[in-house]
Amino acid sequence: MIEMQGVYKTYPNGVVALNGLDVTIDQGEFVYIVGHSGAGKSTFTKLIFREEQPSKGKIIVNNKDLSSMKWRHVPMLRRGIGVVYQDFRLLPRMTVYENVAFALEVIEESPKTIRKRVMEVLDSVGLKNKARFIPDELSGGEQQRVAIARAIVNHPGVLIADEPTGNLDPDTSWEIMRILEEINASGTTIIMATHSKEIVNTIKKRVIAMEDGIIVRDEHRGEYGYEI
Amino acid sequence: MKFRTLNRHFKEGTKNIWRNSWMTIASVGAVTTTLILVGVFLVLMLNLNHIADNLEEDVQIKALIELTAEESQVEEIGEKIESISEVESVTYATKEEELENLIDSMGEQGSVWEMYEQDNPLHDVYIIKTTDPLDTMNIASEIEAYEGVDRVNYGQDYVQNLFKFNEYARNVGLVLIFALVFTAIFLISNTIKITIMARKREIGIMKLVGATNAFIRWPFFIEGLLLGVLGSLIPVAVIVGGYYYLTQNMEILSRFNFMQILPFQPFAWQIAGLIIGIGACIGVWGSVMSVRKFLKV
Image (cartoon, rainbow over all chains, first blue to last red; front, side):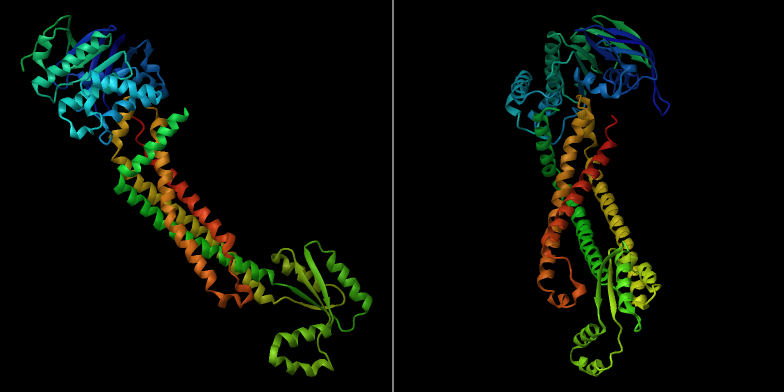
């Protein structure tokens, strides 16, 4: 469960990204965050896994208060949250297998468990036969599937996707959405920031619309609501 | 940390050496160059120091007994000298023995002195060695004040200059070695910093999936260690090989007793160990210091 109360964020350069945010997201929900560039979508997602800290306000993730969380506990928090980006953020010099295995090495899993689990996850995103490739040898859609595999390999309760289809063609985007829906069906909360009207209007989920750092609309089975 | 994780860090650190082969060459090159300098300098300094020690060891005091002194007085002087705690050894030599030594040490020209055998102008002497050569001057002046001692002789000017020079040389050597080591650390940490800068993004990604700082730092630690040790291999070969050559081909030097350089065994191996140690330390220090900056993500 994710809860934010009166959250403000002003960056050191003076940019106001969030201007008083109150929101609750329950376990297992699928939430789209929509809004124009600069509306605060990215900042909102970054606060959840503490890549950024709020200037003011309270954030609770998995029953832990992030504002009082010590630096050394941040890695623990992040192990329970998978993150997928528009630009994939894979380790460029590691193979597909090593990229996914890394998230398990971090939690000191046994090599046997790592092998089994990594192949399992790569299979579920349809990349079992590309395990030995390095990211540069893959297409954009394949790289994004590797990123998703890495994000879910240690069964996180929450998956955050910041414009996961932003760099992909429509067909590949639908493929990614199908995988995300499967992950959601297994009980993982998904928070997805997106600019894709087609996706939001076709796969109906809760929609949170942001403008100038505040939530202007929050509907279940909502519409995208903006003209592109 | 579990053992398998340490194993993982070791593999990762070794892999990084290959993945960043270009930067590895640059770092190892920097370590190699500086360690050769440090090594050559260390060998020079330690040998100079050794020679200086030998020279100081050779310093002795000759207390010349008055020609008129009674036998009992001579004995009394001997006992008094022996009772000084800083004195290591005292030997007595009659003027006849002294003349003989003199003639011997002069070689062929010594025969000139043989005519003095009838009327020996020399004194009976006590030859004194001090435990610490630096005490020579104080003890000499103390003995000179004894009744029955005509004067003392220890090559006053020579000894004073020698001590001054040795002290100066040691201090300058120490400062230079420290300066060299610091330059080396600076050079290496800079080179490694560049390699890590290129990996800044990777470190960010690692933190994103929940890696702790220690988890990220370990492979860098091992990588630095390996870089330092790799960088010390050529310097060790150069220093050990060079010193071996030197010890084999410098018989000329050994003719002068005081110019003895340190023997190959165990000195060369001690220096080799020291160079590898310094290399490992600066490698580790350089990489751990540089990675620290990028961990606050």
